[in-house]
Length: 140
Image 1: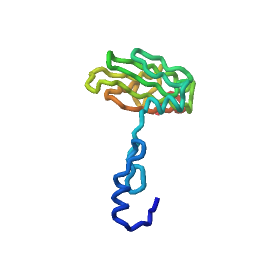
Image 2: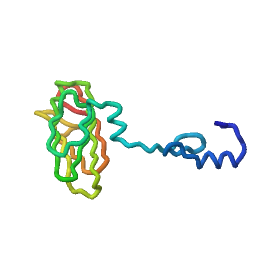
Image 3: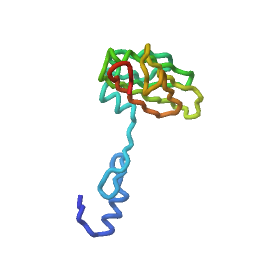
């Protein structure tokens, strides 16, 4: 890259450059075209529930869970936070249909709370929620 170049034609060219689907503007990547499911699967192939469309009980080794509520509502039952303190679990709604009225409910176990409540709802397509098992009986 010629960052010190004063040539306006060079800058115009850099502002229009595309690199493998990524937008490069002024020599910096501004937007990246990523297939999230492929990316997540490549990072953690044994830890991903690629798609679940029914009630799901989170397993002790789950890291990322992809949820598809295009056909029906889904309840995700979390484990006790105290049993896995410090663990992170990511939940991603991956419906293809952005007009679905179905919801995904994340349900805390026992007397646990999820950010102060006994449950949380994922109502919208492409919503990502990352939860960390805190000390005691809470997910933060």
